Image (cartoon, chains in turn red, green):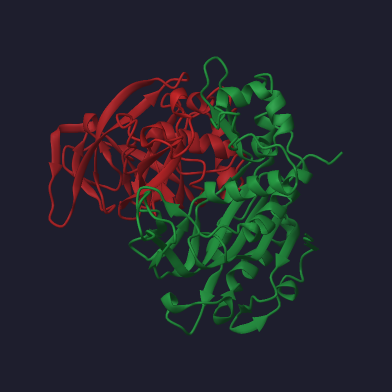
Length: 242
Length: 304
């Protein structure tokens, strides 16, 4: 199976956790539907109908991600417009009726990821690969919010082979818990293990159909785990798709 | 009639502030925003957009959707009221308001949702060096309440100096997809707003801002752009970065910028440029004139 590999990075990223509506926190990396959106921006899927979720949805498109720079989170205050009708009064006249609302927002700092993509539809895959290779993006690429502009770089197109093993293998991508055999993760020294619940599958109405716990090493180091199946790229890197 | 924007372009903008606060953090005592890990000063994209909007409204008489409008009672207009100004017709808003054509808008008003992605997006601006945060305390002649004999104190945080780089993209495909007729004139006016608006902010917290370099790289062919122009320039100085106080104490290294532009020469249609004459550029270790360093390109000087 052909796998397209590219890197994406920026100054800041924000991938809002679904359970934080008023004090926005960020995931440590973009979940698959977000990556589908990034691919959609490069490829140029229609923005008005959420076409990206169809073209790059989990049915057709396999997505894996590797954390390249340590996950760092910072908080900044954003001055947002208060949209509750009753609050649009004279500013500063009453603290409780301020026209703006200050929200502490969590950002990823200096995020950098390697994305692995395979796609059922060869035409889509080739057009996407070409766009990334020539640094052509139909829409503007960002990391979660429109002002968090990102840059990307083509790494390569590689052959990959699906493998199974009942022994632990070294994986460079986060692993969803449902892919593990008997929850087998070997805890190694000097590694930091985290678990986050992320959306995996989203339909075109933007309703999440599947959430999954995902385990990752926050400095981007490898995980040693026993998984049902994984893919080995021609240069020997092991990845697991979401 | 001005033509529609047909090309992708990237914008690089440098400006500096002296003894001022380029962008306060409302949940941190209105201190200038600082990346605590590196000491770099940050300015949000919305600050720059506000600068552009205010300039286009006050000096150019353009209609701006997102602004403070008060009724007779001093109450602010809500987004509902503002939409009604345009007969609740998003198309009319787009046609009339230059800021919506440039930056888009989201309104979550009942039965009248408008969610437009702007063709122009800016990243947060970042200073090219570590900054020094200074706390100023002063006295005023006004007391804090009636019946007092003395004035109250004022306090504020300022940056003695910060040279900030902004980077943005103009995406013609977004405009088409969102049904926005973005005209060349809109982008030209925005550039003017960036330059003159920055200079014209003369409130106590912003006075002392000077635009130093504005560059728009216009591409030909579809969808290609270089990316991250702000990361291709760096600041050279003999001083401790925190003790820089003036543009004359630094040089802007454009070696990498010129290199990357030259390597994509055949994909660049032209470069629009405005430079402040107090800036010194260097490339490969020697002082250069920016225009001659970019002699391989069609240069259009911005005049405003």
